Length: 396
Image 1 (cartoon, rainbow, N blue to C red):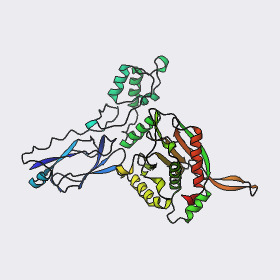
Image 2 (cartoon, one colour):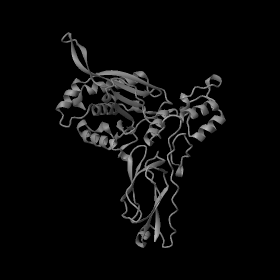
Image 3 (cartoon, rainbow, N blue to C red):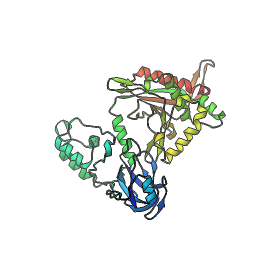
Image 4 (cartoon, helix red, strand yellow):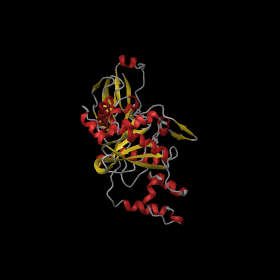
C-alpha cells in the first residue's frame, strides 16, 4: 500500500491560502478519483477540493474554520497496488509526508502571520500610507501584522505629526477594550484591492441619462433584462468601437486590451464579487441574459469558478439598487474604468417641441477612471456614447 497526500490545491493565481468550510469525508471512507472531499473558502468563492486518486481516507489533519496555505498536506489517501501503479508509485514508495500544522485565524490583539508562498506564488501587494516610518516602527508593525494604511486613524505626536512607536503602542492598548471580530477572507481581499487602487490618481465624470426608452424596451422583452445588463452591453459596445480608454498604463506604455471582457459587481456576504462576461461586445443583449443571470446566482452563492472571474477590462456597478442617486465607486487595481448607475428618478424635462415641461425618468451615470490614462474629455465622450446607446436599446 502507498499513501498519497491530500494537499490544498492552487485555486487561483493570486490565492495563497484557503479556509476549510466543510469536510465531506471522514477517516476510513472510500473515495473515487475526482470526488469532492472538502469545501474551502477563498477571498473570491467557495470551491470544492477533489480527491486526486481512488482509495481509502487513512488520515485527516484539518479543522473546519481553519486556514491552510496552498500546498499544505491536509490528510492521506491509502491506495492499492493497481492505483499506485497508475499514479507511477513504486511498491516501496514511502508514505506521504506528514500533514503540516494548521494555520489558525488570529484575533485581537493583532498577531504577525507570515505568508506562505510555495513556488513563488503571487500574493496581493501591500501599499504604503505614510511618508516616513522609522526602522523601529516598521519592525513593530511587521510584528503586529499591520500596514501603513492602518495608521491613518492614529494621531501622531512626533515631529510634523509623525506617528511614533509610543503612539502605536497606546493605540494598540486602547483597542483591546473594544469588541473585536476577525475580518473575513473577502473583507481582507477588498481592503487590499482598494488600497492598491487608491495609489493611482482617480477621477469621476457624471452624466444624467433618460431611461424611458430603456424601460419601455424592457417591458416588451420576454426575458426582462435588468437595467445593469443594458448598461453593461452599452459599455461593451462603446469599448468595442474604441477600446483605447480601457488601456492600462504600465511603465511608459499603454497596454491595449485584447478582448472586451466586462465585469459586473454583485453583492455577496461581507463583500462584493465581480463575475465577468467574456467578449461582451460580440453578443447581442438577448444572448447575454441567461449568462448574466447564471453568474449573478453563482456569485451570490460564492461558487464562481476561476474562469468566471478576473481578466476583465472594466466593471459596471448598479448602486441605484440601494436607492443611491450618485456615487464615486473605485475601479479595481487592474482596471482603468468603472461605470456606475444611480437610481432612476422622475424629473421635469423641457420638451422644445411641446414647449413645456414633461416628466421623464432620469438616472445619473458615473464613469470613474485612472486619470493617468484618460483625461476628462475622453472619459466624457465615452460616457456620452454610453448614454446614446442606452437611448437606443433596440440596437443593443
